[in-house]
Image (cartoon, rainbow, N blue to C red; front, side):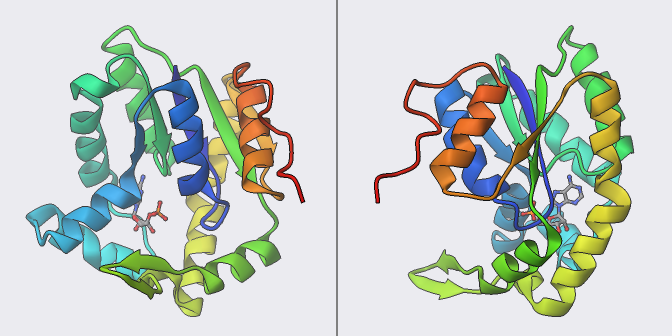
Length: 203
Ligand code: AMP
């Protein structure tokens, strides 16, 4: 199955991507994670991407699309994938469609995680990640960068919702609730998942 996970920063894309991809037995491919790995590895790609990431801006399409095209050509992604954080612009979406079409492939579904903006700001400002045993705030989760990232989302990424709706591929998922409830809703929209998916955790 070939699936795109769409949603604003703080909607829980990374977490849901892991669970959904595991259930579908496909790799979860996160452009944000690939960029961050390149930044910590101090590669040329990381050096180019860091300037944009630190400002809360999108990395230019030509850098991002080339990186994703390479990743999707790897053997583990040939039979399916779950893309987390890509595409983020209409241009990226069109290039993804063209690059899949070149291999006689199509996307099966696009899941949009929906969370209202007050909840996003609350989640992002409290979010921490574990780096070498320490909980740290991502540079781009600082309050002023968060506001800018949400604006970038509204302007450049939110139009993808209509783009994929027109293509008949979009399912909107209410992303408020327990993690496993949200996963259950996503799997139901994909027409897959175990019988227990979506049942809230006891207690
Ligand atoms: P994320 O972890 O998905 O929130 O991504 C973190 C940052 O990586 C974003 O704020 C962008 O600077 C960059 N990034 C990730 N995915 C993309 C993409 N598809 N296009 C452009 N920039 C991206």
